[in-house]
Image 1 (cartoon, rainbow, N blue to C red):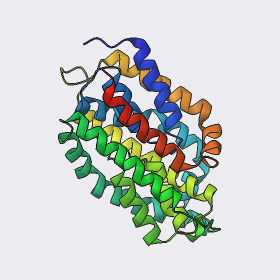
Image 2: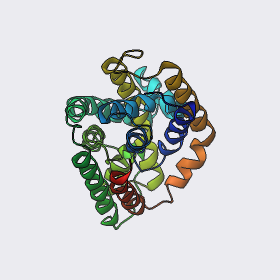
Image 3: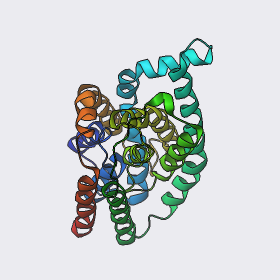
Length: 267
């Protein structure tokens, strides 16, 4: 089937905006690709991960000081927080790969039943909503206080977030909030480990779905979507990250669950 250039532009905009909000950018793209563009669920799922790499540049630029301090820690020249962030990055990314890669391949193979798949996606959104709604206290811990256990929990949850409906940023941010970290620090640490994780997910998607094959994507269309996603991300990241700190995750998750169930009735 032929997908219009407008659809590819919309996919890029969706990625550029939702990547920085706790509503699961991959699920938003999956729903649009499967229920509006008419792509199969397995193809839509891989497209969602392929698009995540488009906003990596915005994340790297936004968090450049954090990555620089971690790089200095490798050479032994960073302060304590730089070493803490390096430890956090290495542990969380390692466990993300261990948990996320096999789970991603499993989910890709289990997308045959549209109704069941979307119903489980809605359930995942509701689980995130409950976790956020049940959170009571606000913490005061900063990145310098992060521990190997904190890093491991974030890494495992980031791996689980390959399941549609589980927002990566929501799960990892909530886990840090539950551990007593400040809201701004929780968001920053979430994106700090999330950017390289999304790059990894994009590379896996490229390997799993070679462009230009019958089961792949329109090369020109996907390039347009990637460019649009990168541009929107660069323009909006600072505003959207600030907005994410003020939004209530449980309300957004319930809204996304309702949208997911509603999509069952779209042709």
